[in-house]
Length: 376
Ligand SMILES: [Fe+2]
Image (cartoon, rainbow, N blue to C red):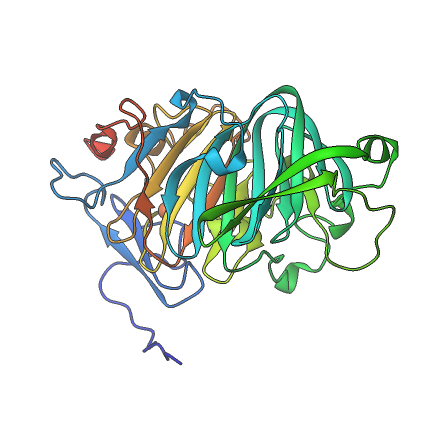
């Protein structure tokens, strides 16, 4: 196992604590390993670390407007692959009104994040209603389908050859950031029993990326009961009660919602801004040197980013420094609002992500220039 070389040291002018009271006229940058859990150094720069004037080559921040993916996709397996590697697949799905088949993902657990719309999920375990802001974790190989009551768009996040767990709560205890009691499960209810019956039902099974279709002469969602500790769960973002400090800008890792072996899913939900006069009030500049970072913007006003609207996704591959946009930096100490109202989903991956084939117009090609001027 790798053992980091960690010998605390400081040089020159520094702050007494990270993210608090940087020396006058400096910009703090965190250089961190292991996704904000490993060794880290805070640098104090004369210029914003994002004040680049040009950018060439394939490593660049990307911004995608997924709202421009308009075509309805009859099956979740038709969803548009946005970013992927061997351990995670992030897809955007514009769902049909009702699926005419069952889906079964044999490649890994599926996490559905409902961005827009509402409907009903029917699966091996029963019936579960859903609405915007819901996460639904579907254990690998669960058979399922949806019917919508409002048009649905969703992110599908596959934990390839892997599964989801809840993060270690550590010092904040078992019932923070959400009480496990708020996780809802499917029910064997009247709606579920009513959809059982005769007639051919096709099940599309995905395994190693390839689809097979298995047809039954009846609906195989025919359970009359089940018992056990494996089941889909549903969590709405409004049930997440974020950890924050009025005196310290806590790192994004504290907002971890689900973990897989090679990536994490975090949720940013509304929270008060820090009130301590010396505390940083926007995300600090950082290079998160072991992780690629993806953020999907679900709702609200995205306080640290300009020109980012709901339904957009940004991708910051590791290897360069990023941080707040210049306007957010300038406004840091003149906050007009007492709290953020953003809701966003972050996916941080240990392994490099590849961008999928996306139609023209989805990517904002000028995103890397959006830091121009750097806020100085
Ligand atoms: Fe970041």
